[in-house]
Amino acid sequence: MTGTSAFALAKRLRAGETVYGAWCMTNSPIVAETVAREGFAAVVLDAQHGLWDTASLITGVASLNHAGATPVVRVPHNDFALVSRALDFGAEAIIAPMINSAADAHEFAAAAKYPPLGERSWGPLRAMAMQSPRAASVDYMRDANEGTLTFAMIETTTALDNVDAIAATPGIDALFIGPYDLATALSNGMAQDVQAPQVEKAIDKICAAASKAGKIPGIYCRDTKSALAMAKRGFRFIIAGNDLTTLREATVAQLKVLKGH
Ligand code: 3PY
Ligand code: MG
Image (cartoon, rainbow, N blue to C red; front, side, top):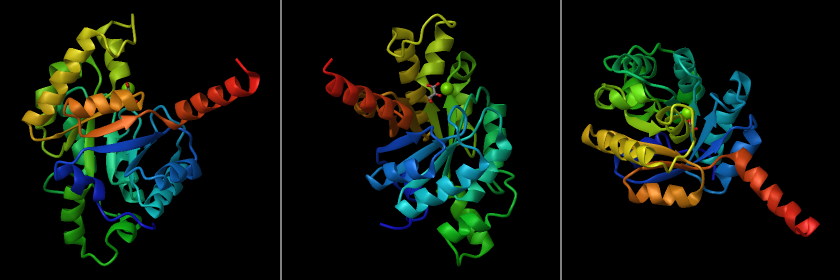
């Protein structure tokens, strides 16, 4: 397969489908492309805790597009300039960490959406080449506002208090839970138990807030078992682990066989 169908992730999620995505921390377009070619519909390139820089993101986004997977970028905390840039590179969804208030959500949406929804600056020549090379500018702006997705991460106690206002912010398409930061915050740094009762309760609250506002609920999970369980609880954009963990676990299993213990 070559070339992503334009705005495929948004179309599927807006139609009510559940989509599983892969997550790459390694700054390698080839690793991301390899994962995509196995059949993930969307692959997240993590530029917050992952190792992606501008140059590798540009190539990584193009590699994913070529492999037929929707490119998604997680930007660093408060880096709203990279929101617009990553969309210009051809990303079709942005995950923004630590969105704690309606004001944060508004700033995120402003960077991601063209008027009238936001204030994204014009210049997506690379993105248009991948998504709609012959579109008129005004048509592309409208299509991109609908076809690119903003995922506001809910992963602090402040965000939890403000979740309804964040979900209601125009230009925010989805909420995305970071369960590890959430578990850290809810235990005041004492634990990272993503299955602790208060974390489970917060997860359901965030899922319900997204659904009530007509937004897409998304979540990061450490493995496939947890991802399938979250789908049953109503989440619709779900990650099941990351490239570094997968590589490490596969290597540990190999060595266990080779060394016989
Ligand atoms: C978290 O669990 O805090 C995340 O940000 C997932 O990557
Ligand atoms: Mg986090």
